[in-house]
Length: 393
Image (cartoon, rainbow, N blue to C red; front, top):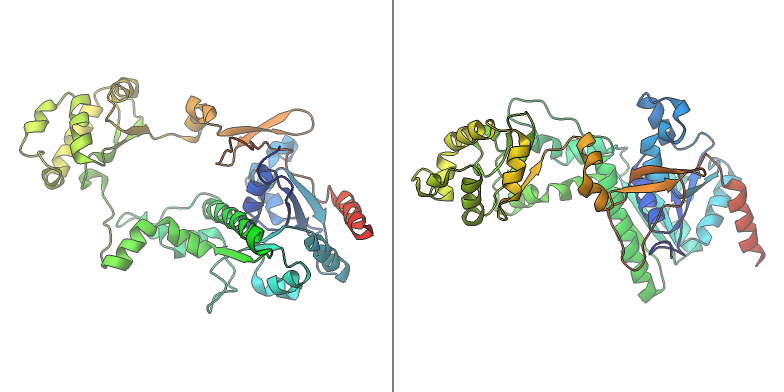
């Protein structure tokens, strides 16, 4: 078996990242994902050019597109024509799932809205990602994740230190989060279909996804009326939950969330067990009051030795939780990342190409990628022939 979704057919009308990300996850898990593209192609095919990558690199010329479109089949349809729309509807008539992040008004114009499609295939699970939701005055507002997920849902503000300008989101962060949510919702709706015999509309939005991402903060404000303060590294309320720098400039994070458990471990690794009886630091409250002094002391201690020295001490203390602050190069070189399945080899017709794996594994139905992202319209004739075969039955 090639994954838990083997045997399911998914039709995707996705642009850029959000819906294609959901499609890529389902394709990784074994679904037959058919990507509908206009004659100009998904605009995400231009990511490599936008990043300044050499077109002669082949598969490596557009890594973001590869990530979200591997193992799919591409059919080129002009949905501006009656013939193109009819073909799309025929595809959907035999599909299990439809994925899209096209705006609702445009879907209605194309006769590809939920009501129109479900009337032809009541068993279809219709998965939709919007910017701001299906109802309300901005339901049809255009959105990219940097707007709806990052800026409007509060992430940028929460991560901005007083006096600083907001940090920039990295590419696709909100889209990939929403794509995972949509993939999960689609699977739940397929389970419901087993009971009810009918499909349904499932939707998420970049805005809601962003709000859920910061729901620790947002729900605290909603329920208590209080905001969780944005910590300043030099005076964090819990100095045991902070980042520090070793003597060779490498940074790391210590994670001492449970005071009674983690504070003694920290004292041991920095050889300051006298702090355990120091009135300034005796309780979590004391450490909060004297945080600036404690953090300055820890800064000086950690600066005295390189990261390898501290890593050996940290790893020798079972109750000391920590992590290096990795660069992307560090992640790629991390033995644990590879051991845990973080990289997958994707066939390209000649050899394989290493890519980031989607983040779930299945013990009884393991998945494997089938191929790199398709060329525009590469499977048009193949898919049309399959449609004719279905119609001739």
